[in-house]
Amino acid sequence: MSQKALLDSIPIPPIPECGTKLSIYERLKCFFHTLSVNPIPQKANDTLLLINETIKAVEDCHSGVIQELNPGLQTKGRMYAIQEDNILREKSGAIVARSKAHKIIIEPTGAFSILTWGDDELLIKRNHETV
Image (cartoon, rainbow, N blue to C red; front, side):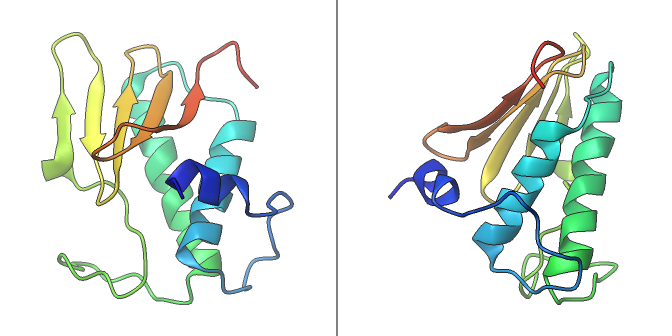
């Protein structure tokens, strides 16, 4: 089953109450849902900040794992914000970022796409016309 098909099978929304411990895929679904319903910024750096803040908020509420300052490669059950050494800032103003399992492409306008790493399956695409 593809990651998109797995995520599509999870009955979110609504997002469970903060404090409810969720599986990694349920948390990913919360993350993508939150990004899909909130306005996106007008600049790439602001969109990256939004993505990182959304990951942190979802994990704070639903992972049950306290954030470590320097988690290393073994995150012990928690997703973390995109680390600076996994971010490529292009001359055009676009940003390409890599997480453990995803590739994030942010346009200079703030529009973005998140794809699975490896097979480039599109999981979410947002621009200023989509809500």
